[in-house]
Length: 173
Image (cartoon, rainbow, N blue to C red; front, side, top):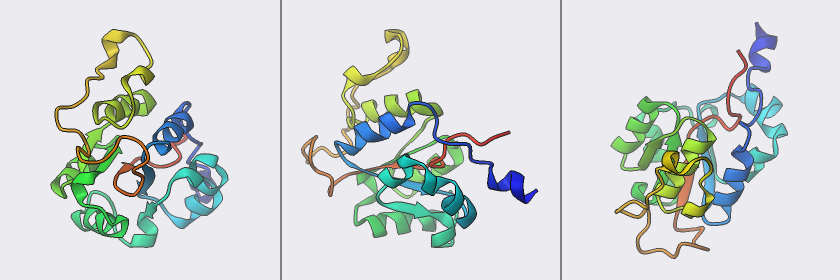
């Protein structure tokens, strides 16, 4: 069992590193993951994408799990940002609801393309980066920009895109 658990995270989803790199050019990119020290030390730390996440909020280090409201409050405090200045993406709607309840801008995204579309809709990435047929893009800048008073580029201290999914992408089955 332990060996199966140890190798459960199989690596970043294809295209995830490119999306994270695109976002990191514009805003700070962090991760909030319900994880454990075994996966962090033996799996995540081996993947280049993990080093891109700064800050990293790992449940085993903070002692609380998503979707607990205390976790989201603590993340905003540690990030030094008002909750509404943090965009949180997660593939679990329960976690998205928890983030929204704490005041985060939060979107449910399954996979890399949905994450990219959510980042475009929030004004973090430009619409030209949408992949796929135009009918599936759904990339219309939102009427409430994520950070209306901050410049779109170079304001790394004022905004944060937070990926709530595991930094490793899908799990092996």
